[in-house]
Length: 280
Image (cartoon, rainbow, N blue to C red):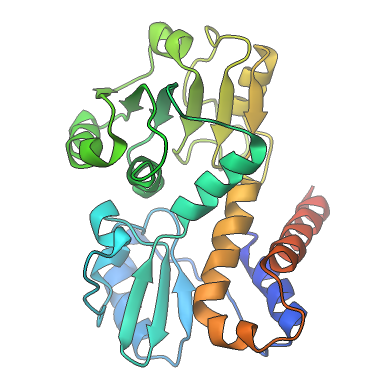
C-alpha cells in the first residue's frame, strides 16, 4: 500500500476540475476485509478503489446493486465501487486501463502467444477483457496454485476465444514460445523481489509488460537484457484511475468548461511521475 500513487493522482484530478474531495489510501488485511466493508459502507463515501489482494473480495460489497450483464460480474473481480442514488455499483476499470495502455504502446495481441503470470484479480481483468477484442493465438496461464489457474482458465475460455493452458511455473519452453509476457503477480512490489519467471529464453522482439508501476523490476530488467521491449504499468494505472474518477464525478465533469479526458489523464500521469521522482 505504501507504493500507491493513486492519492496524488486523484488530488491532481480534483484540482484540475475544482472539486473539493479527499482520496486516501487505507491498508486493510484480507482477514479484516468484511469488517472494513461493513464500516466503510456506513460512511458518506462517493466511491473507492480496491487493489491487491481484495479485488475478488470486493464482489461481495454490502449493498451492491444487482447489475444485469455487468462486466465485473463475469470477471469476478472489482477495482472500483461507486455510490449512486440507486445504491452501490461496481466496475472493473483495470480492463480499460490495460487494453487502452497496450494500444497506446502499440502492443497487439491478435494472433500472438500470450504468457500470463498470475491468476488473481488483475489476470482476471486481462483474460475477460479479451472479449470483444482481437483474439490471441493462445494463452499460457501460470500460477503457483494450479487449481486457481485451472478454475480461472475454465471460466475465461469463452471470453478469450483461444486455447488456454495452465502451469504452476513458467518453463524455458513457455518463455521461448511467448510473443507477449505479462506479469500480473505481486512479485516485484517489494525492493529486491526476483523476476516471477526466468526470462533467459525470451526471444528478442518479444514484449514484456509488468503491471507493477513504481519501480524498474527484475522482470523488466531481465526482458530488457534479452532485447525484448519492456513496459511498466504506469500507463495502465493512470488510465484505470482516470476512468474511476470519471465514474464517480461524471456529472461534475460534464459541467466543467474546457474539460477533456486527455487533460485529466495528463495531469494524473504528471502527478504520478513527480511522486515517483520524489520517492527515488
